[in-house]
Length: 149
Image (cartoon, rainbow, N blue to C red; front, side, top):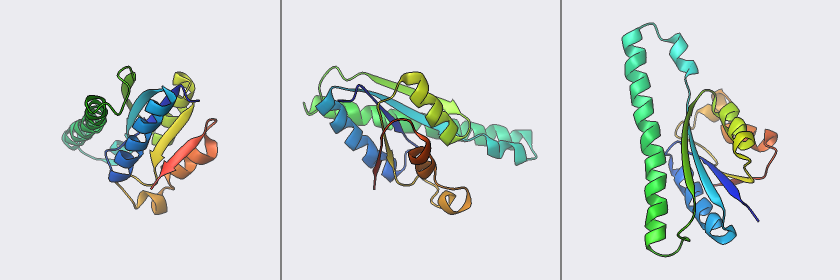
């Protein structure tokens, strides 16, 4: 049914649970997986020090890399157990920008059939302060979105 599944991840518990569902779905529908992590760079503009921006940017990039590597490791563990087909293609991406915009852009560019994402990310207050990324993706995506608690 699905050919390409997108997993937006920030490394949170909700994203990890969504990843487990996506691996199962990919195995069942013989779909490929695209893992996306978005580095929110808008916050940098408000910072006064270049050194602080550099340190923060480096930290966020490290976190992003870890999030996609953790997902890749999880997929390999499933392959080794034989619960995931051997030829699931995995593509990992790290983009900069606003998460909703980058997720929607990736859906279009990669011709995504299904998005599987968690209900909340690492920063639960974002829902109250900025509006939920998940909610905005559900409302604006042109493909189905499966939300995992």
